[in-house]
Image (cartoon, rainbow, N blue to C red; front, side, top):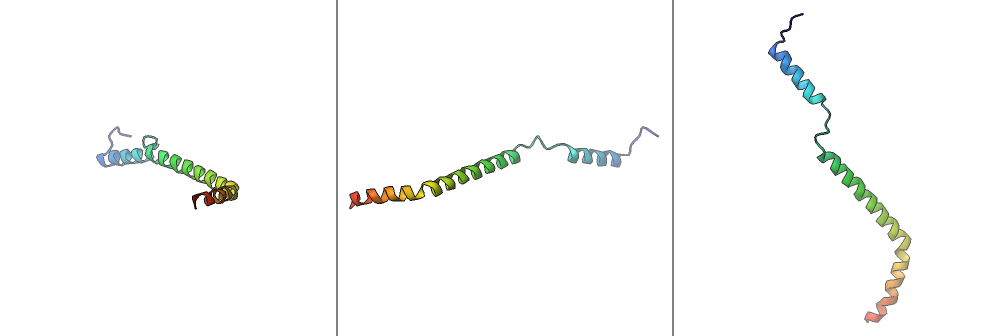
Length: 69
């Protein structure tokens, strides 16, 4: 086998190598996913808190409301 590679083959191999490289140099997508997961967790906690404390909070505001009239 010869040590000579055609320029077309070299370009083809270089293109394949670029596409096969791990994408760890682009952390923007991973950061966005992490923020989305945190936002979903915060929303779930907020919904759980409102569900658990909702009636108590409504009763508290109804007790204070006559003082404003």
